[in-house]
Amino acid sequence: MTSRWRIAAAAVMTHVCLGSVYAWSIFVPSLQAQTGWSKPQLTWAFSLAIAFLGLTAALAAPLMKRLGPRCSVGLSAAFFGTGLLGAGLAIHLHVLWLLYVCYGGVGGIGLGLGYVPPVTTLMQWFANRKGFATGLAVGGFGLGALLASFLGEGLLRRFSCASTFPLMGFAYGLTILIASRNLSFPQLREDAKALDAAGSKTCLAESRFWLLWAVFFLNIATGILLIALARPMIEEAMAKGAGAISIPTVTAVAVMGLFNGFGRLGWSSLSDRLGRFTTWMAMFVLQGALFFLLKNTGSLWVLVAGLWLIASGYGGGFALCPALVADVFGPARAPRVYGMALTAWSAAALISPPLAAKIHETTGSYDIILRGCFFASLLGLVLVIALQQSLRSSMRDQELETDPA
Image 1 (cartoon, rainbow, N blue to C red):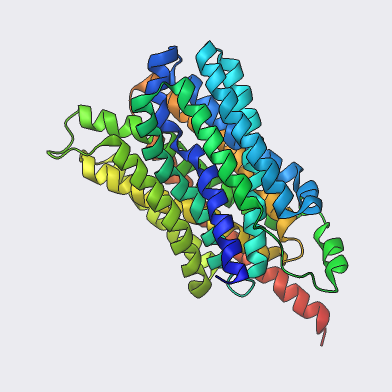
Image 2: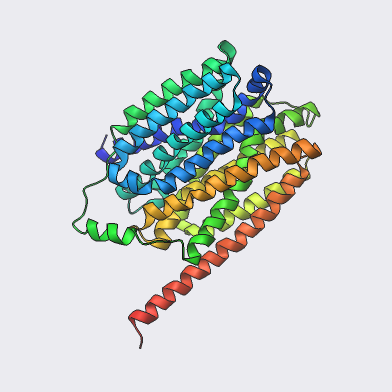
């Protein structure tokens, strides 16, 4: 195995472990039965973990750059593993705020420390195939939900939630630590200092950044609430007898993780051929059509298939974002701008799943949620077009500056 493929394997393994956070809905029924906590209360634990992921990725970007991928991911192993161990203690003691602190805070910091370095590392090793590189890295994050769904379900048959979380924390923490030892950047070029200086330029005053941020936010907000609510949505449809054929809930949620993972690699690889903007427009069109279809269907299989395809587009956004950042802002600025863009993930996690859970608890229906996702997809399509036009305008201005004649 060549050096860069060994590094690619380590990057994917890191994201597979961290992606277990997307299997949260698998644990919700057991947590409710064991602790009596409500679904909205438990949704906040998931939302806080994702929020801390984005904030850590943005605020700790300079630190991670100095430490390098090996040390940053090593710290991720410590924080993420400790967060899961603490979550087990919180469940055992029935202390909700401790679950928020451990799973949401400590575990979320671990997610943030480990998420960005594998992506930026592979973008440097596969500089001529950025879409493929980012899709390969973050694809593991989506596939992690598939593994964690079956692993979590198997552990819950033998152990309580209070024991399952520490077992997963030890296994994931150790695996991430081992993977971290194989991560490193390629040999730095002589102009690295100049690139670092360029990379420090702020992006917050640029309209292009906020357009990108909004596109990323809308793609996440519409997908993450379905991931958080997938299991109860499917169980509710089965209880209503939607369709003559049933499907095990854990299988449906796990396959959703599979689509999430392969969607990241598939959509991002497609973007290397079609372009980032065209690919993201196609994703928003597909997702909008699916949200409209799900609102008007009574079929369990249409619901499940729709969730799977939406998950592929949701994952595709995560793979397209770092490559698009590199295209729009240049490779020198990409790591820091990408870290700032991940705050959209934090905002979406804090707003979307809790709001959706509250709406369903109040109305007893998912119609308003799906209608909102449909219109959000249409808005996302408009914003992608606006971002594309903004970039073209900027490129024309640069050409005029360099060739005033």
